[in-house]
Length: 317
Image (cartoon, rainbow, N blue to C red; front, top):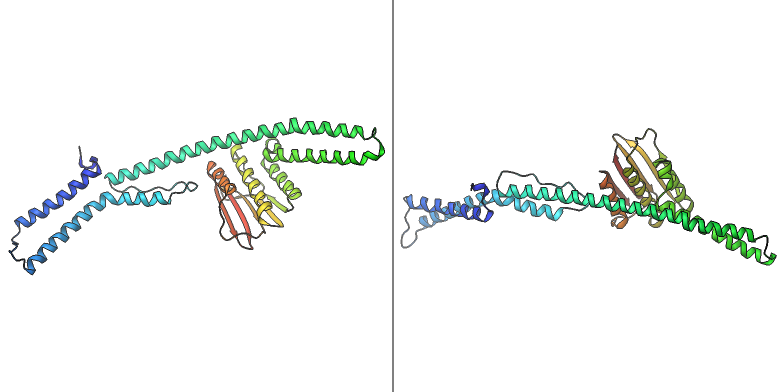
């Protein structure tokens, strides 16, 4: 077995043993002698020899053990939503092999997490589509039948109950509108039928109508066609960002832009709300980051007091 292939324990033992053997041979062959009562000059020689052996031992061990400390420091700083952190291996000893193994482990974990997240989000979108379809086909049609029945009864009921019947019919109509809005939020049919641009426009209109926020939108020309998964991610990030504006920002105006910047397509949602100094990532923000990782996009969130919040998603074009 070659020295570089020895376990770290035996390599440390050999390094220490080698240093002590060299020191012993050097002392044995040197003209230095130690008196029964150690003289100052002899003590200086012994101290110098000990210091030299300690220095040689430290230098020899540093090459083998320093990568372990680097791995430990990196393990403490690795974040789930910030992939790509790797160490550069140096040399060919056990420390270098540890670094290589650590990098390979991170590669496997990130690949497995990305695959798992992709499957989970695909299953989530499929379930959203199924629920939206059932709401539209079952609940929506049932409420439509109720509306038609109430409208047919208006001409056959006494005059004094027509106002109450009209109130009930209006409640049923509002319920039908709510069902349609929930179904569109779960899976917008316009995204499948007309594409991402129309879906973003419909989203802005819906938020502006029901969210109490004026939404201005800008969609650039000449944008490239994006894969279906990328379009879903862009739409969901825009949806989550505008939902946060309505729920938390206390804003009067929001702006959504979807344009091309260099080699990337950039979605940006900003508002004029109160913002915050220390933004705490919740389920919504983490969900946006996980979706961005799936398509290799960069997500940035900038928020400051009295200057609002800006969510920026940069997608490879």
